Amino acid sequence: MRYLALDVGDRTIGLAVGEEAFGLARPLRTLRRRSLAADLDSLREIVSKEDIGALVIGLPLDSRGEIGHQASRVRSFAESARSLGVPLELVDERFTTAEAARRGADDLDAGAAVVLLEDFFSERSRRG
Image (cartoon, rainbow, N blue to C red; front, side):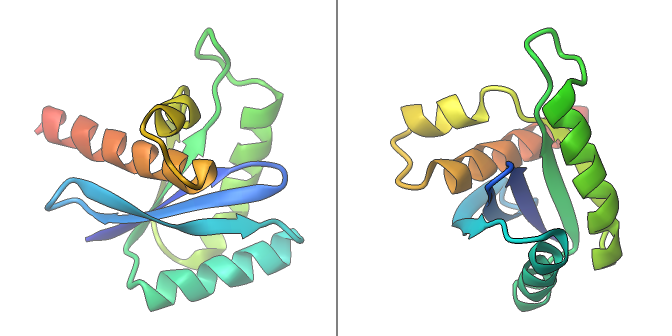
């Protein structure tokens, strides 16, 4: 199954795609946010074009691992993203941007989405 990872911010959404069978992800691009409806339309096109079976959305928990203001905003976005018609999971995204920077990502938002998706695949394989 192909997954689309979203690193959702106030101004941008970093995108990466990957297949669980290989455990690898590749950056797609960073989507500039316009409006919720426009953002969902853009994502709907990507889901169709890339044959996406599920979304992985980064949840920006605070340093204590708790839901803060930004995580609440992402949760609200995720509820709206259910209209895309594919299953979705919210996954802790702490440190993904820092890891993307350490890896030298050209596009930090899409790079963070790659890290998020690779971490997601790794966690699923550990659980068996």
